[in-house]
Image (tube, rainbow, N blue to C red; front, side, top):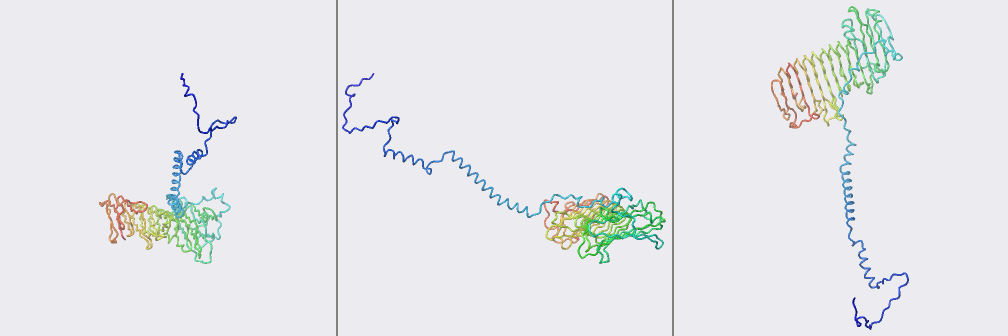
Length: 490
């Protein structure tokens, strides 16, 4: 316990005036308020701290600001790349043609099944179409020069499909006993506006004339004539059909879609139809008798026969197929290519045990772009000769040429606009390459040069180090027992 002395317990009297605060009211705080100067002094630092321009950013606000700045810059870069790269790509895709898928080569050629025989006479198929098919409705019958005759003429509009078919085969109708002919030409009568189809029958007996039939269909896949011949005709008898298909002369080009013939044992002669008519697809089938075509022009042409020759001049923009068995092929061909289509123009020629002689002229619809041509030639036990030359206005083309032979000589000639590789092989015969008229800027590089194999490259400028099959030409020739000669720069 602390005891204070009496002196310290007494308050000393003050000389200052006495300040007495009023008594606090009931319910009020007993804390004292600062005076004015103190209040102003306290207010200035508080106001200073609340000034946002001088307050430091909290840490969480700094991270949020950096996040939004990153978003802004990313968006700006995206917009920039879209303008610089995306828009040109979109414009290019709109302007340039769409890239096509690789073509189905089978679709570039006509189907063999299209050139088929007619319905069997009196079959269910004919009965179903009886309302439109007219059979044995001859315009006239008679007897002349010791033969029983019958004739009929029908006309069709110069559009759509035309066909002439027969049930004759080399088994049904022997070669002896008569000759049959088909002639396709332009009508000499300039006033005629329809396609005229004339049919004449000659027979050595009335019974034989009655045994031969014809049907005419104005519509459908058999639009035209169907010919029916009797079987087992004696060699002493005579039976002959003569058919003429005459297209009109027209000041405007006529463009029928198809012409189909299936006429074994008929001599078929297709005359020049240009400039009046250009048929899109021509499919010709025969057997036993030659097929002659004179300046036949179309998008697609197919000619198939056996034991007879295929001869003539052809011009195609898509494909030409020449198929023969035991018969030669002698043709002059013009391949017309449209470089903007992205497709090559094709020729296939195949025969066996006979000669194959093809002269090919390469033409183009554009002189500013590279055309493409693809040729596949085959024979067996027959000489093979092929010449490929550019038309004067045709730029150097991409040429793909495949040649196959076995037991007869092969000769290939290419002009000096050719550029590409060559690969020549023969198992048991010599292989040679010649270039007697080679231009000064045209080069020939030989990689392999042996008795039976020659490989290398020929063309203008430097040889490509990495050949591209789609843009570089190539010639391939294979033989088993016979020599091969490649002549360049013709």
